[in-house]
Length: 265
Length: 346
Image (cartoon, rainbow over the protein chains, first blue to last red):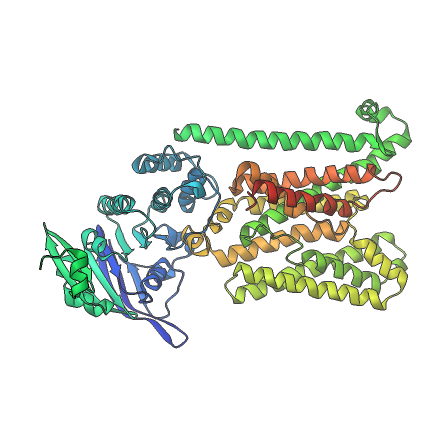
């Protein structure tokens, strides 16, 4: 499974939001997309999800041009979780069923029920089934939405800041679950993250996006401080401890700062 | 809670609500048949059961007056309920109804135009004269919806634009009606005014068959898309990703919704609040899942209008209040009560 994007351009009026975006990603890989606000991260995902139609590009999944698929066919290939979610008063069970509709249509059959059952077990949702989606906590809600998206049985999973509103424990659980499912099902997963720490720890590849252009597309291990400084225009330092990389921004050591942090250097 | 158990529980709840609404409808239908002259005559039940052996007068009253009126109430109520739930669903707005989108005002204008310009009273055939009014009322309301959809398709069918276009068109048609009323004779002006009072005594078997046809077709078409309404609740982008062609589906659902309202309003005049309140009532019990919401909103619309019509026949006997006045009288406070007490209108 290979997702390949070639020369993707998008302009809104005179503003060029995406310029010559080309990259490839393989099944089983998580691509972390990072970049400052307005870099075009969401716009890129929306093109792959098909809401925005490029005029001169190819978005290919193996040999299939995703731009030519109708919404129903596309939803069986690509699942997308938007950055914003509106308030809906339907139950968790109905939300899961909704994820299955692209396959089932109006009537859920035995096979669909079995898939739903498996998903419930996988994400441990059995106690939530009858709850109203709006009554759930942020973490539970996000879990249900991802479960519903996976019931589409997609090849590509697009997540736009899926953990921004979650507490640390839920953030870790969510990313853990995404990583597991990506490897198990061989998905091509693209995930927009604001937390570079998480991006470094959970992604196979990193796509650095600035002003609509790819500034770097690298294996996660190749990330260095110059790339990040260039990307975010802030002073950055990388620290390695016990095999994990940590990022500090704007780390200037003046007098007050030193007192504040009890630094020893 | 296992999946099977959840399914069972949900099915039970839906079945109970359906059974409740159906029995309410049957009970009200029976009351509608046995009530007359301002009171309910329970002994008439036995006469209705043996209607073939009854005297001609009674059989005539039941078959030609009370039964079509009661069927009319059910069908019009169901059409308005279906229309309301469709509009609220595709526009993601709890206030959407045939009124907010200007459909009713457009029908009013069409009917006024027919009365003032074509003077159907001058047509000797009474069937033709009614038909001319209904035809123009129907055409203008469908025209109104096509204009809304046409404008909407230029802006990717954004709900707020659709609603505002509807509001604008509603005022435009209302202004047109007032213009006609101002310049025509007093008799015509009062005829146009009376037309707008929704009134179920206009029911005949001919127009009822037409209503039934529209109801069945729209119900099948809209109900089979129930999950697309649910998907739209998550926003247009999420709905698209669940496999819904949002722009096309929204146009198509709105046109069927307008068809339901237009056919009801064209024959019976303007009956407010049923389309708005019926879906909210069902939501209170069953939530927002459209597989149950769509048919049950129609059913509860039928029950509400049948009940309202019964009241309108009894309250001020010997005057029979046009039911359109009563539905607004009851519907408005009912909506306010629901809003204030439950906070669950969504």
